[in-house]
Image (tube, rainbow, N blue to C red; front, side, top):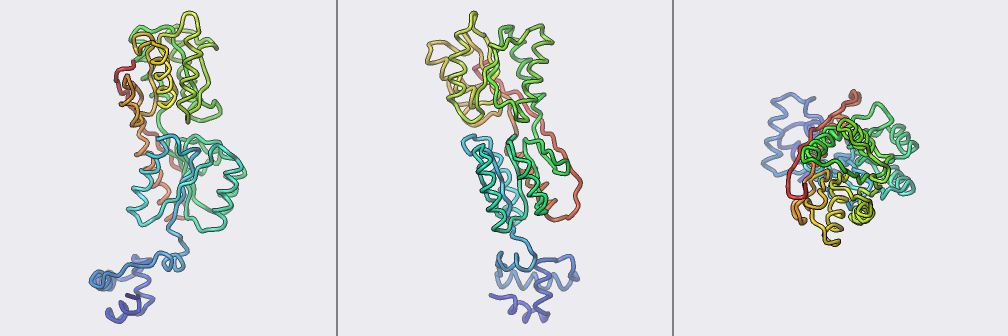
Length: 330
């Protein structure tokens, strides 16, 4: 079925049918309704490639994440895809694996094919040249859990400060005073906010955070939480509670506790952050802070659609609330 056949049946020009498909607001309602009725009767599906030639759009967005090993980014991707598919857009997903070299390869891919918009996700360290090139290409950008240096970019992020406060209120209310941290990369947006609030909460409770009680982990690996816990139990006295900056590290810490013959929360209480699906199935189940990752993806996709469909859109900041999920580990 072709546009020409639709035009013949509707007794209009091919250009009018094309306008109904691509710019319906420019067509008189009666004419538009008549053409849409014929399109439905003939079960016509427009060719996306041909539409792209007409509108100058590829109907494709790209989500760039630092890793696909962390389930949080899978949830963000699902949220993005949910909105894009609903609006007739395809979604590409690319992982930088924390590599500036990989960022350049992805940028080259953007230059070779048409992309309508980009979502940068995950507190990543995006090179300034990379961001500048996106700006020069006039490609709309929205950030998720990442504070862009380019102030014109809109971004969606979770309330890390409130989440850390909830975690420490829960730990301190249980009487813990010997508290340790398993942190992530300190250059990252989320780490900075969580660490700052953790220190403030400890100070408010009259507890000094010793440098020996803060171990650097990795947001992407269970092994880093496992290794950090093994170091922390060597302290005299060993910590009675640990706040891990995400669930992946917390689950690694729980595995180490079990392997050492200790028990959580009796010997060491553990609390994480994110509420990934695995958190409720480890032993003991993980007390954590719920991060609305799927919803972050949805909001980011809506913001990007707005940017792609309008030439001038003011920067928007969207802060999403978090929630304490109490299970068995703390």
